[in-house]
Image 1: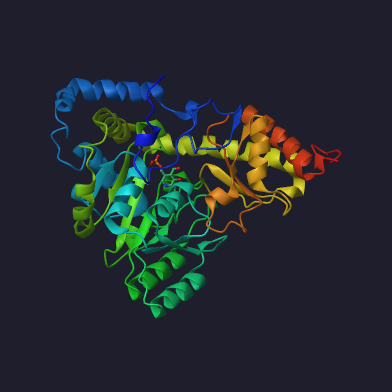
Image 2: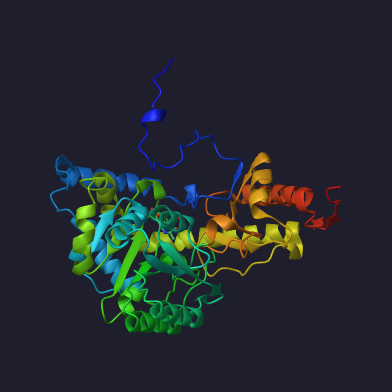
Length: 410
Ligand SMILES: Cc1ncc(COP(=O)(O)O)c(C=O)c1O
């Protein structure tokens, strides 16, 4: 008999994992990047160059550049954040992390205790929602419209909390290409958000990993850049612009909070080779790589939109997103997205059901999130046709696909 560890597992541990199986043939989940969009040759040359020049740095846990990560990569970010997001910061304001997920954990670790309250967008990144649930914090979710988080609702919510004596720990927002709605908060709303944050003395936590991926290449200034009082913590990532498996993200924060974040990063540093490779690659190629990637993503989005129009017709409602890698789709009210996920899985189609990407389970019941960066154009077309077939069998919609009338499930 193999040794049984189950009786020894620490109290309060998460539910055990199930063993990994290869995903279905048509995978519209996980926010992966486009394998054909990766500059493998240039990345290879970059790693070679970095190793030849200063590979011996790898003998030091911190690459001889201190606890905040490889200095040349932080120097690149200082220039990039100024150019693209309007952020004025120095390398000392930046901490390189193992993906922006570690950024989320570190910021939450520094600020959140059980019973605290946070404010976030109602439809929200699953990784963020799950972290709040695990930490036992109260979530006050603000609905979005086509312009992002609704400031009128936020204003009332903050006033209401104040009358109850509750000061939220922060307002979390994915203001630029929101996940999952892909909305972008315009400059006017950003100003209002900052004004409210100042009025109620609540900091803002800005999660910005999609901001380079607007089709126009333009974005409003980051909240971090617009803040006059230094009340914004900003996180970003190389996952969406270069490659998620590198696991390199970053936090930009004033020292007053960075000083509390740093002691929580107890892993003795994030992967050094990745940081060295990225510094070398980004300095030379980032600016030309990202516009090409955007083109690839938008072409895939157009394939997805055409497939949905053909296969679902008016049964699939969505706004054409201004950027990003996912589409937030509303299906008819009788579609239960959680059940659709299970039925689709059996047909080899993997989707994100809305309720896992929203604090409001009723509002998201018939919504799904479809990631389009990673599947090929063919997979997108065939996958959406297969999804429509499953949806019709289970829920009777769409009644027509590819302009052919079909029978609903008896
Ligand atoms: C809004 C948001 N924040 C953070 C992350 C984490 O990304 P990473 O850890 O790869 O940087 C993601 C990933 O999809 C995301 O969508």
